[in-house]
Image 1: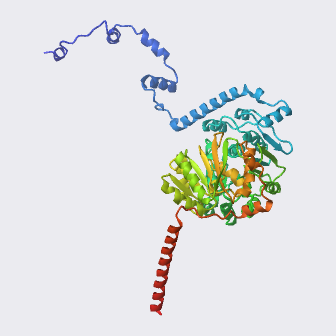
Image 2 (image 1 turned 90 degrees about the vertical axis):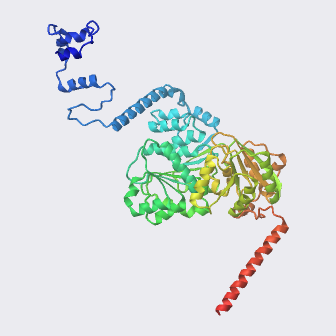
Image 3 (image 1 turned 120 degrees about the horizontal axis):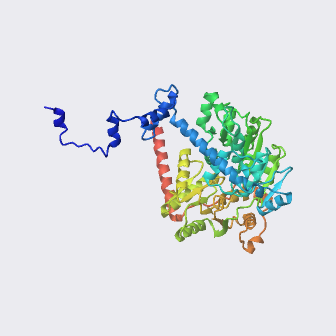
Length: 569
């Protein structure tokens, strides 16, 4: 019995359908096609293996060649190369697009430059002042040759059009000149000095600190740190935000100092690090004082002298930025700068025009609480910042408002660093609607979308007023600022009225006719604020009752201690 015949019984083979396959088994068939394919095979062994892999690699995911002695390609490296290639192509394409407009954007005469400055309210003082630029695309021209990764980061961060302070400051710092810059709050001063400094540093170098930014508060220093990370993305700059922990680490291991490129610090922390030999500033090429008027006040002056002395690089470039630069600070700054250029945007010591400013007479201290509660009843649009003159008053106002059903918190220097960081994060995220603060929050901090600033206590100086209300109306957005004043504040009102008028706000005529405070009066107010009544809505009867109870408790404690001392004797 033929087993194969039995197993194949019932099976049919369609010769027409499988004609080509059938010919392979036919011994009489000619082999022209086979010979043709053999002649097409490559002679090189490596090419033969490649062609073979291409035939059998259905999913096209082969990374290596079988039998090849060369190392396998790293997918990560190939991906990085691909990304770099794409970035280069994007940059070249961007350059080609921008080059088309170069001729239109260049200034043809100094008259044109003067007209442009006048339109943007840019005033400059000094010799051999570089021309401003019109838009960020101009920085791609051969004259500026801005690094491609910075251009890319500007685009990603949403910086479309430069502000007047950026138009003029960036070319000056790129030119290597010392600079004093006065521009309204929220006008983009931080980017105006960070962009040219990062461009000049180019990339990380393990030689030690090459740029130093000094800020009056830790909160502002942290904000600058975040901004540097954003603008320098793509270049692995080592940035140090100087704290007690980072200073101690560098003291233990001096080699770590060489790894950093940029240092951000407050004056006191930096001076302590210098005195303890935890830090070296001999290679610093760029020194920036943010909120320079505050840093060059009497309280910081000794610390700043020590910082200037520690920066021993002969070619150091110094830049001062602030919303207000009084004449005394300006004179002092000139003693430590080489042939500086001075920029003023708009009116000197003026607030930005996007802030609607209002002065509200409340009669007495009790009237302030009534006024703020009326505003709450009408409906406050958060986030709101409230400024007071002392820590005690901040605490008192917080205890009054926290029971009014307002989502409120308080920040001042007595709170721990972690508490302050948490409060700022919560306020940025919108979980805190109303934030009560001392002067700690008045300078430099950029909170997106603060709608209202309330000066609960009258500011001690014009500079303080400008910086306080500058927390709103930032980056072209509109904002509102309300300042309460009492009978005791009336003599100092004219100074604030002048700022309001200079910013284009409407001011009642009777305020314009008021007498200006004398120089001695202004000095007194700057040294010590007006003594004010405690913030409290408790009746006098309840106050006496609480005071009586407190006295009884203290008397009882005193008797107990006296009895204990008698027993021991």
